[in-house]
Length: 184
Image (cartoon, rainbow, N blue to C red; front, side, top):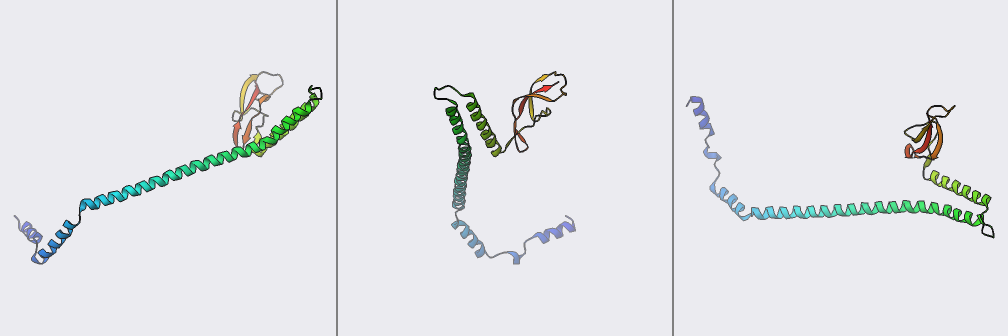
């Protein structure tokens, strides 16, 4: 052993002033014997289990409340739309009644007037719901669905020749594309 190693060994030895009295050591041991480590762990585990169960119940209640609120909102929206449709249904029924004469035959002019009135009411309802018609000047694949292409003299390539079904937008989003015939 070198002098350096010998010097380090002497310094690492316990000095008498660092040794605690035995009575203090026994007191710590007595406290450790009185405290049941398994009971403490079991109590902590039980507290954590109860806390987890409460959190789980709170989350289940939250999930059920959100589902109930979503169902209520959906029902409310449906009711609102149905209330707006009822006057249109009433107009349709009245136009059919007034289009018939006393003999029960249909008067074409009165029926056409009733249908035109219903069409105006439906257009107003769609507008009230935020729907606007898709413009149909030139074919745009983002706004239109081409049903067919037709070679037509005098028509500019890509122009819409015929609208088979109107398209609608809600804001900037296409709700339903217009179905159209396009010039080649």
